[in-house]
Length: 459
Length: 161
Image 1 (tube, each protein chain N blue to C red):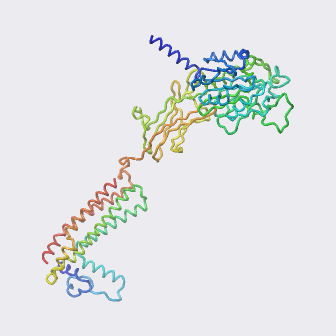
Image 2 (spheres, rainbow over the protein chains, first blue to last red):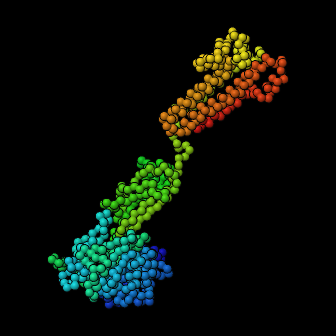
């Protein structure tokens, strides 16, 4: 009976620790069930990666993101509804609450129908802006699919995106072109460090509403690579929110389509691989960092005893050693995390402001982690300090480690003795010559005393 | 020696004839004497009239001034890095100087008292009173001096670490 229960528990744990690093319950919000068959490859791909898919209509009364105040799902995939808005159970507030509770969301938009104001206000909350004309689509007369959109030029063919910056790891790169039909464009706010574009429109692209006339040049808000086709927002708690401009890119039809660029030859699309990367990143299968172990101690030669590890107290001017072991989740396992070239993992030794900010160097490697370490001398300042590792980069979960230690001043008997400092020898000699002079004086005084006494007596 | 002590009791100008055989310095100073002659005269008077113990005290104090001055000079020139060493070395010299100066005040004042017995017959009552009231005996003063010095040395040796 007991082993039966244990087995049950084990199965339960295994289900919880599915392939994603943060749970496997995925809710797909889908307008009507006939649409479901359009994305069958995506569903089977996701199920193949260990997700438990649940499908709900936004109109459904039973749809709730929370149960007993906790998330009922780990991830959310919202496809654009035909009707206006996402219904009473998926208000922007509900969705943001879901994000606050570390739920991950993919929101797909479509250029076919105009985007609802509920979605627009939700995106405004995370500093992502939709075009004023909500029916606008992105067109590009240089990077379109000549097979399917020879007239309208609204099926973009783009290479898969490389790294956002040279010092950032690329999570979405690879061979092949992606077909993105009828993209609803987004622009990203300048001020938020949490949003970053995954895929930008090419420089020759612009957005307009095909049902209306061409807008005048004054009405155009953003063109070219200012337009974002796929954007991401990662909250401070590392919950992820991805906006995909083209829902049609998820369809089976485009997973297996053959496209032809202008002046190019026919190639199959790489949508399936790109969508795999996109869902894997959003649902925390990639780009997830973990701190396995942090050690700090006085720098010594050889092995360190267990009781000397991670002491609560240091002294000023102590030579101190710090190391941190970091892993990265890669689809289904933890692998050693390598800091991208050009980037540095840094340690701060902080009291209010950092007294030291040091680059951590990779010094060791375990089965699942890389050990980064450094060595430094604690500053000549006593107080409550903390070892801090604050590593926040686009597309990687935030690492913020803070370990407080006390730094004390020298104890009374820890100062060097005076005679150990050659500069003090003069004063030591001075002191002892005063004492020797005193003793000589006393002796002479005492020897001269009887004379005085005799003198006194004789008088 | 008795004569010299006697000389110490009286003012230098008032003893021209009685100390003639023992006083080596010039008896009087001319009114138009040069500064060098005055200094010479003062030095001669000092040598002639100061008791031996007082001279011993003066010699020790001069030694302390020398030692203290050297330590201070070293601090000015070489910096005060082990500052506690400077403080204790220098303050040992200064403190010892102060203690020795107190001993000199107590013993050289009563040194003139010692010679009072010459007038004992006439004014015995006054002499007795000065012995008991204002004067502290040499032995007592010296014991206090030893006690104070030992405390000072204890302090300085501790502080120099």
